[in-house]
Length: 346
Image (cartoon, rainbow, N blue to C red; front, side):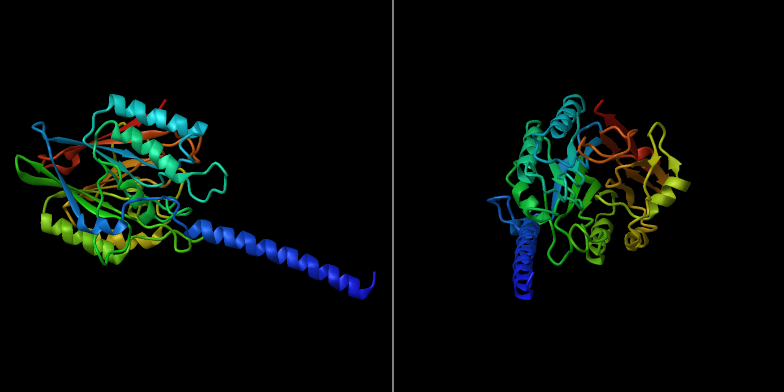
């Protein structure tokens, strides 16, 4: 082959490869930065809602149902349908006062042509809305990986009547919210929901961590209220490892440790900030599909739930479930204040 012909062919091939790289790169750039929600609500409206409040009935018990790591693809595939059926069975048979969707509602990096995160949210939320139960969302690391950030997801969720949300200016994260519980017109307990953030570099980066501004918001709010507080966020802290190994296991709660509980080492910042704060009596997380635990340690419960979804990767022994936390808001004894029940789909 003549040298000129070789160079010409090589140049054409190089141009084709370069065009393909640019096209693929452009596609990924679009998928990781677009907002496909079509949300009609403005996320900025969240900043006028930094708290919510509910009355506890005469029983003195407040029941929180936690749903986490469903990893919906589009709300219509086989695994999603099984998950939705499981959640509906739980709601049909388990009275509750509040629902925390504790992150990774949606599958993350997924290039399937069937992937539709907002259709999936609609399918999920329409079931929840039928029960007229207030619910909120603690963002997970996967929810913001494609087709819109957590802010886009929350703006989309704000169209639902029973969705409760809030945030504070100058605070990291897409959602921070105190839910205050009143009994006979007196503030007796609070739920704190916060964003544990996603990844430092979307999809391929290491997990992010709870930032100082969020810790300041939490500690300030807890100290001002001066009542026992249950904290919900998606990703756990290193203290969970110590609680698993050295704490008092909650009787009847299945415990698994297939993953390293302390893998987000930078969340030690959070652990150190709440150490010795007697008003933070529960830290409830999820994220680690192969783990499951509930232990009382250093004056508070550390509770981590395995997945609620069939589409979530998990060891064979892990069965999708929801977690019901019953809070006796009038209890003076922290260990006796809570009851935990894992409700399995099968």
